[in-house]
Image (tube, rainbow, N blue to C red; front, side, top):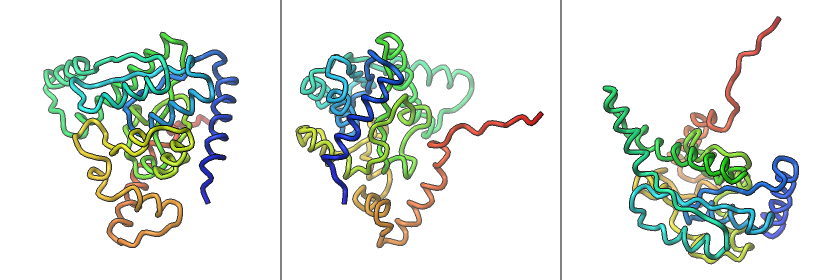
Length: 244
């Protein structure tokens, strides 16, 4: 049985230990979307390090319809933050690629903003003496619902061992308002919710991950296929080993 209270305390201790070993005095730099993952990650870091050592970066691409959630979250936690709009950077890169004679397909168009956001986070981290938090959860990682070197990157990963339902439970232990933990998850890039993109619910996925049960054979096959084909996103880069 998942123990949200114990897990919260264990993660807080783990974050403190990470920073003691890998960045004494450094800040946790977090991309803030206003959704459950960035909200819970930011709250965990604030509890572990103190709000003064957490730096939130809001990165809309032009007009973001739900940016109020991000603004409310950083205000609720009392953390320093900046808004950095990535629209011009993404547009300039897309234009340069098109001008080279290449046609940008949908996959490339969806992934570019995620990678620009991670570049932005590492730039802020360099300026603010920080360590970048990865905010992916186990459910997303399981089916490859992340961008390699985009949101799948980071220096430390506090919630990657937790399913979506477990992240929400930890968020409740942190006393986060439900509007942050239960906000409809969407990637902010394609205009679709996570579950619309995936073709199945997180409840179904979480049960399959933890209990091995999926009553829909087609969905089970899809989850297994996505898990297999996306494992490379979570593995270290293969490197040739020279034998002398």
